Image 1 (tube, rainbow, N blue to C red):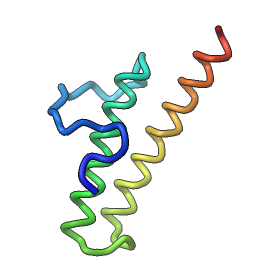
Image 2: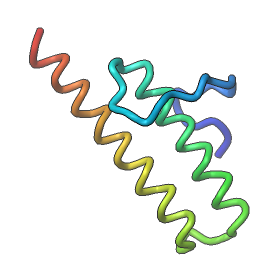
Image 3: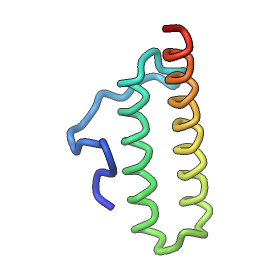
Image 4: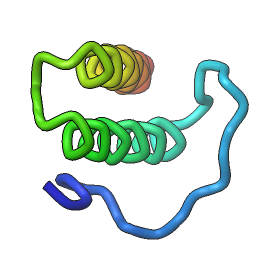
Length: 77
């Protein structure tokens, strides 16, 4: 589960909680949230853990934000 698709293992600066202005910032945040969810799963040993579910929800929201951003950027071209 290490890293995830398209995610590097390098550390990224923490961004303020706000809609990201670029696809790159969104991808970085998705990678960070994915790693966090993986770590919580390894601690909890259960996909049904409330902590894992909450981490998954946060990841889902960020992925949806990324998809909206990509759709807007391709619709405006």
